[in-house]
Image (cartoon, rainbow, N blue to C red; front, side):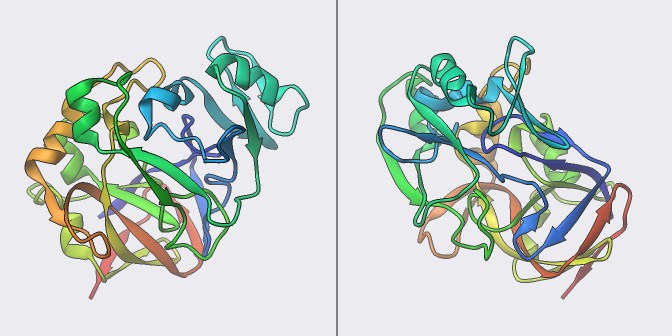
Length: 267
């Protein structure tokens, strides 16, 4: 196996950037989910998991050009920390928001069940759970759970859609013939990736996000329906079978990872 894609997302729920190498520390990928959009009315972290409110975030991109830059759908760019960024984002999203690089204690997001979103539509008012983020990470970034998120080409081939819909940090190329959702069998095992060592912590539960439009990439409900149909598994700590694709990981040994680095599975 080897690393075929490296990606980070400087602002949570915005489009990310491909990189040639990453530094992995206990808190995760350097520069990943370092910022988030905060709903000024509720204090909740904005996420496209709640499509009715926040699917518009996926029309923005965040890139690193010495500092984090937010690229608007019209192509204009505003640095994180610029005095007009919050007001411009608020106007574009239709809600008062603020971009923050400090994760509040007990930071939470709202997450409707993907079944409800697919059945009733992205604009429907549907019930939503409130979930605390970052519970599997020692860092202070705005990751959903563990510091690193990965997915294999075996799983992507089975799902038949683009990796960007699943928002991983690493795409791991697996040999032809590898079973789909092979990540399920890696729970508790370690991966040597470049000079870093990862331990797989959880299968990645899937929300509605992969089904949404991502920039110019059109909406694709099958990107979630296929997971719901083919890989419902029990997720430790959640107490029920959930549609999963990919895996979360913690950083056992910090290190550097580059494109084409070998990946070795250890028991």
